[in-house]
Length: 348
Image (tube, rainbow, N blue to C red; front, top):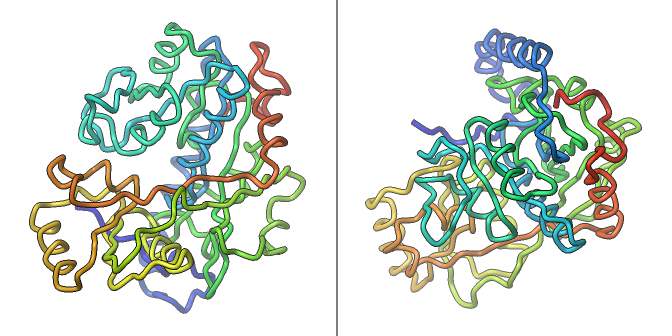
């Protein structure tokens, strides 16, 4: 059973859900210790090609997949045969597989790999080492890993950490710093930053800038700013939107900011498998409003084929403020010798 992301996770005010936070704290200590032990004990494998890791420090909702797709695009634009590599969360296929959007569904490979495959060759594999070797054997010159900062199995030449830069209404990307399940963190902030080579702060399209306090949290790590912008304007006329991502409320905000005539919004749990009765309910409600149904690109891939023709996808993309500088960073770590080398071994 999937659960909605608790909004109080992202509040630094510990008066929100104090009893729940307290009861979950022992589980958080166990989670943090197990993650640290797993990373410390691993011996990263060099698959023979440079590895660029794109990850985050929280359970979800930072925007790492759009950043991964943009990294693949920029490398391929520079003439480097970059391939994506994902675990394929939510998909049934386990062996290394080159994603083909024409034949694979989200039930096969997961929703995020289908998004990445629109930007370049993308592989899924439960065993990241096996997946990296398969991609290298197929001619990949560099691999861009989606959601791999806490996966220590591959030796990385560049570790990027994506951070949600939106800070409003007491929302803070790291909450009060608590590790899952009493907070959104996958590991302690200082541990995750110690294995990072650079930070990507992803802002909404309409955000004024990054909070100075957030920038201070990154210490001397280089920071690249990007904005999550719509790839196209929202549809004209009334729309009823829904989303099953880690922070569905951000989709509602983005549609409002883009000028959509939003009549209603329905949040679902992250990676939700939409049931026929859910979709019929939404369709009936949209019909009463005279509205069109709209969802995110990621959610659209999880829709049953017969519903895709009835529901519009609203894609977004990560746009870097200094795209040339970010591209140079990627290229400098894409040579066979690993370019500048990782900040701390390959353990991220």
